[in-house]
Image 1 (spheres, one colour):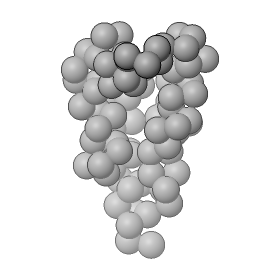
Image 2: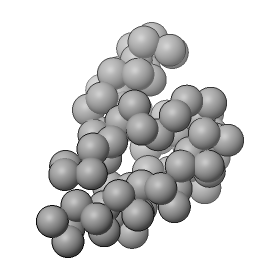
Image 3: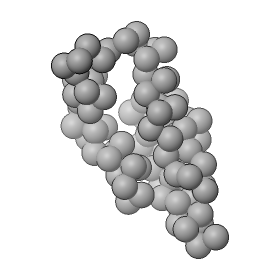
Length: 82
């Protein structure tokens, strides 16, 4: 339960920046028990931008190109639970 509370606070601390960056609520891609769902976020990006993965471009590369390095760091922090 402590981990879920920690994840919830982590998610909450990034919610505003996530919305300002990606124009979508972070809560669509999170769960306090499992944290940030990178697969769901990838699906969202694919629906919004089309298939950006061309065997050369990673999600991080795409996010950096579209949103900047700060957005990449935000996603990394969500994945790492920071």
